[in-house]
Image (cartoon, rainbow, N blue to C red; front, side, top):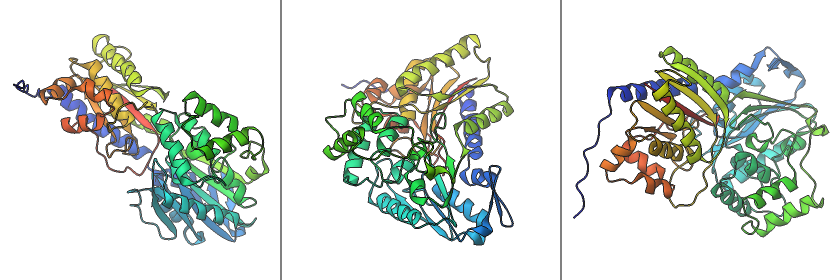
Length: 455
């Protein structure tokens, strides 16, 4: 006979208060990196003078002005450019993730496409953008709006490759736990538009790129695989990524052939620093993870918490990173270090998950599940993983909340947290508990945030 389910433990008032404050802190962080607001802050127009991060452009000297781009924040960024430029804007095209085209635009077509696995919609949009860039002359201006997810949303294969080839290698790299830097080092060398090649196609036109960074440390050539920035990676770097993750035998033959030919000097490299293609290009980071993390700290302070922004460079396997933050939560709860009670520690970055099971989840939910196991029985503590774009992995959850009561509440429902973690199945686990963070598409994307809160 099956054992009788345990009675579900209730949340104590301290934990309820932490959760209420967490919602306010998350809201403040997301508002700070609102894409439209970020673009308007860095692009200002006074008559015919467009000022971009301190540099001025005379719009009267440009015959045409177009907008192109890709990323989860593409729609609000394009709408903001339309607002700034008004009648000086000619038109344009931007690719966004399915479900992210909610912000209306008048002159810029917003096309939905596949992410994180690219699809034919994204390929066709990228092909049209490249053709537009190639048609520009010295008296044209191209404004690019690039945000996290842009690499998958601008999937134009290099000659000799197919979209299926790129889909296969992208999926293999994601499952192997490759970092975004590694993933994009490969994708740039399989693309006709990334790794500075959009800027090369647009030359001698003037190019302004507004970048909403979702990459740790904001390396410009990694954000959406850097379509408008000099590429610091090589074909040999891309091959090294495949070797490091044991994927040489799994790579489609055409992918491996291109990378090997490129490493041997038989295929031209992507444009590097100093290339004339970038003489008329300005790249501007309009918002990033640090801005969101700092806004979270300010809101936590307003709510009465002792605060600390620990780092915006957090990387590593999600379940291992979780143990570190659970350890910090315990230290705060027991000894008041590095923050006394009530404390809110904030960190940012991007972890990875090496997929071994067949479950559903994302790196932030997996981090929370591993943290929950480490926090079992500790009162008044939370560890939270949040994807700022509102979608953690292939799910509609932005992340999850772990507390000292998570494991007991799960077992009361007959759920085995160790088994869910083993199967990489964090999404249904937290959904059953009501501890998933369902924000919907936030229309921004500046990497992940981690919160440690102690009452």
